[in-house]
Every structure is written in structure tokens, then in C-alpha cells.
Image 1 (cartoon, rainbow, N blue to C red):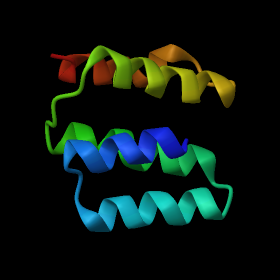
Image 2: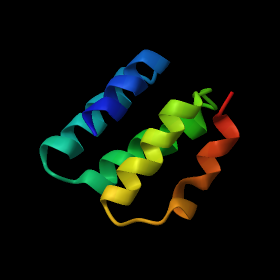
Image 3: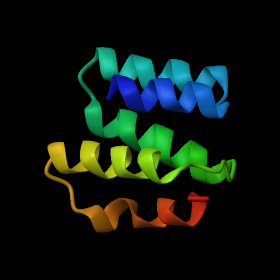
Image 4: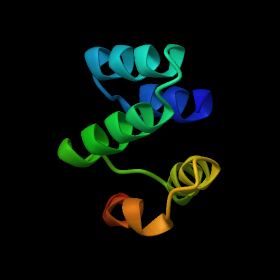
Amino acid sequence: MNSLIEGAVVLGLTEIDIKNAKEFLENREYGLCLDTLATQLYEYEMKINEQYYSLILECAREMHLKDEQYMYMRELVI
């Protein structure tokens, strides 16, 4: 999950969104952390690469979530 946050920083996600994601992570709210990052990246229409998209899916799988839940992020892949 840390890699996902670090990637969001590199992508230019806002400081407040990064802070919120880190807070969720610190409180072991992994689903909320992932949702915050994915939702905000999507809302800001920030372009991601295939590797970052795969990382999103990998994090979701670790939480036993289905890939379909984050398939909308595929639209952002360049």
C-alpha cells in the first residue's frame, strides 16, 4: 500500500489526498486508503501507467476484492 501512496505522490495527487490516504493506512483502514487514492486519481483524471494500474489491482486482490471494483481505473492508463 505504501508503494501505491508513493506512486500517487509522484503522479501529483494533492497533499490533502495523500495525507488522508496515509491516515487511513496508519489506522489499518486499507480499503479506505485504496478507495481514496483511486477515487481522487479518477476524479482529477490523472493519467497512470500500466504498472500503477497493476499495483491498484494487486492491492485490491490482497484485500480479497474483485478486480471489477477498480476496472474503471483502466480509463486512466496511458
